[in-house]
Length: 232
Image (cartoon, rainbow, N blue to C red; front, side, top):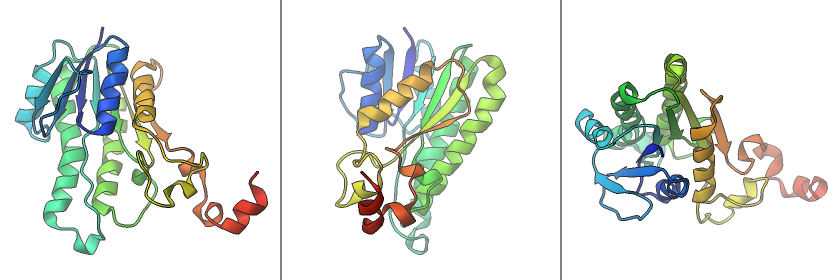
């Protein structure tokens, strides 16, 4: 039975991740900025893990730290010219600051076979309008995960990330850019996180969980005439 810490556990993706690990018999502790109740977690904590104090408290609550899942994020929406200093800092702190603080607290306790899995986003490598702070935070998160994979691999700790596309109820027309013809579900992200947590010879990678979005050319795929001509 592994000790699993899920940060950002109150979101639909965080809850699905908790359920996936609990179904494997793991002991799962969830952390969020607000109080929540979910039977998948043996304990739920309300902490700001972007701070050293909050991160230390979250890690200190664990009997063993075998798996850490970084699923916390904030996504202010708007062009860079209307993004405030507070929104910028909030996005970076929620995603990148939390990841840094939790990893700094958890890594000294993680033994051979430990795993860190971050929930990134396709926005880390596919530009989209209106999410400059979120995209920058997720890109930084992936860079941090690669760095930790390199530095802590010799200790037997693996570090990976998943990059979801749009998850949950789509806005009108959102599914058009996805080769699978739909957006994703939280449990599909959770399945990928669970896989990476146990994939013993995989480290330093970012696994897209995006229904094929990242392989599709928007210039061609979104054109109705080309879709009608070439797709079955």
